[in-house]
Amino acid sequence: MKVYIASDHAGYGLKSTLKLFLEGQDHQVVDSGPYEYNENDDYPDYVAAVASEVSQNPETVLGIIIGGSGQGEAIMANRFPYVRAVVFNGQPSPLDGRAVPDEITFTREHNNANILSLGAWFLNDQEAKTAVSRWLSTPFSSEERHIRRLRKIESLSPRGRQDPSY
Image (cartoon, rainbow, N blue to C red; front, side, top):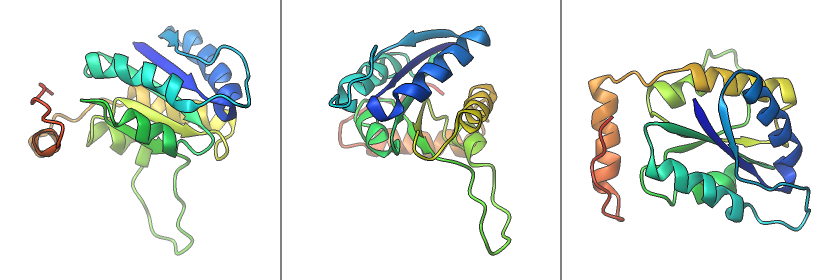
């Protein structure tokens, strides 16, 4: 699998860890920066490079973007056509005992997410590796109801996106 990866300064250490981890799993990893730690960098500069690649090839490449919370990174990525970026900062464990679905797999199975945005402030290295492995290995379900919903998202977009194949 070809995976584009980027971060900002807050996610730089986790990006370096995940890049080596992904290469060790025989993924083709394209590092879109930063290439050195700079506490004054801005995540849009690096996230836009990943989102652009995924936007051009939304069904054949995936992206991983990393920041402090992952929120701003996902907002930036979702500005690009055909990008479906989701934030993951850990599986919820409700204190009231409710069972909740596995969030990371739902992002792929139901929403065909093609960019995973991680918050380095919330995940340790092992949690991030586990999440990335599950996310990359989970296929889109291709169920009619999920395809219908994704088509609606595209057709209702104010940017006039075209209907991609799913």
